[in-house]
Length: 322
Image 1: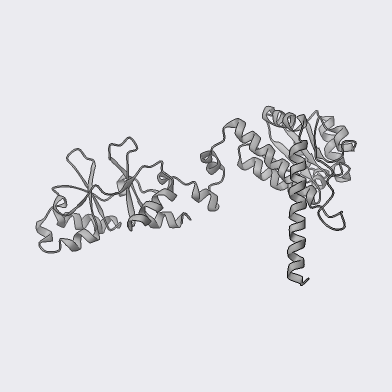
Image 2: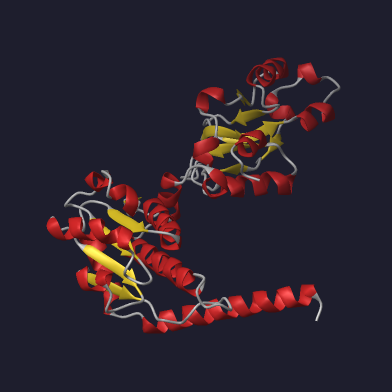
């Protein structure tokens, strides 16, 4: 067997081992998990997540996932906790301590502190008879599946299961609180995820920036408005003040002969594409790309076609919406 095939065989074996461990975990979850969710929902403070080594790395991720999905949370390093960071933990909090063996000595002071001040303690471990399990108010027990490596000692299956339990806790809390994509965006405005959830109203230019004219406005004035506003277009309003048309560069070229003797109503393209302020910015980009245009007028969501803003493709690109 050549090296490439051997590497692929190892990779598949590891992934299958971890997948099997996750299936065992899913089937074995019991009331401890449900009790943990209930206890976190009851807390008035934060979820303090702690662990050492590989469990610590997973704990950081779990805390971050909680925090970005509506459950205030903070990672506290157990070694730093022993040197003053215990002061970060209040009696309004709940502690989620993670240790596969349940015997990590670095957690000792954190466990003692939680017991001394009556701070609820959730233990996540694979050892029901461990110190962590005995001290915890609630235990989420993971199955002992062994590890995916050939030595059987490198944290692989165990860390994957721990991460999955953290995700399961976060999603259970989200579902109970009816946490929405809009809520997620509030906690996560940066990066690709934030840009995908941006709304048109977040990126559009307000009414004071919108280039507008009436149907009877002379084209000489329209050209001035196009130049001043800098969007390359002007929206044309009917007698009721609603969007009736748009004058674009193409309209100008098609009406070049005698242009200055015409009005906006003579030159405009009727019933232009528009979008509502609550639409996703991604949707606006799709409309612009499909119609080969560079901007959209934003109209009142009630269907009146009253103009409330304008969105340019460059606004979306700057925000990372592509």
